[in-house]
Length: 166
Figure 1 (cartoon, helix red, strand yellow):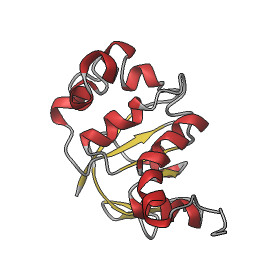
Figure 2: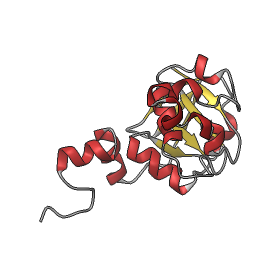
Figure 3: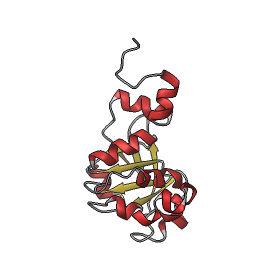
Figure 4: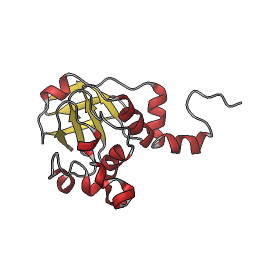
C-alpha cells in the first residue's frame, strides 16, 4: 500500500524544490531532504518509498530544472497522477523514469493521506473498493520507464526510442 500526497493546481518547480536547494548549492544527496520544504514542510520527513503524488492541473509548471523531479525520485515517489502536467516537467520526469499518469476522477476523489495501490503496467489506481483507470502512456514511454529512464534505455539499446538501428 502507498500513501497519497495530494496537491492542487499549478504546483511549480520552485514549490517542489526551491532554487536555493539546487544540487550545485547543497549537493545532490540533499535533494530529498528539501522536497516541498516550503509548500508542505512535513513531506520530506514523512514521505516513504512507494508513495504516490496526486495533483491537479499543470503539475510541475515553472522552470525547466530537472532537479525538481529528481528530488521526488530521490524521495522514492513511485508515480505521480495529475489532471495534467507541464510539458517540460513531464519530459524531465520521464527521462528520470518516474511514471506519470493523467486522471480527472482519481485526482478529485482520492483524499490526501489515503492508502492506495497502483498497478503501473495495467494503469489502474485502487483506493478502497474503487478502481480508477488511468490514461496509459504510449508504448515507447512504457519502454523508457521499464528501463528506469532515458539514460538507462539508451545504455541498453544504444539508441533512443523511435530511432532506427542503422
